Image (cartoon, rainbow, N blue to C red):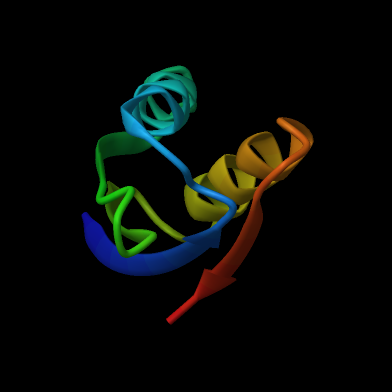
Length: 70
C-alpha cells in the first residue's frame, strides 16, 4: 500500500467530502480516502499509482474539482 496526499480545490462542505469519499470507495485499489473540506487536503491509501490516477480521474469527472498531487 502507498500513501498519497492530494489537494482538491473546489471543496465547500461536508457533502463534498461525502461525495468524494464515496467515489473513492468505488475505485479498485483505493483502501482509504479522508477528505478535509476546510483545507482541501486529502489523504489516500492505494495499491499504487494506477489506482490513484483512476481516483483523480473520477474526482475530476464530478466537474467542480481540481486535483493536485503533493
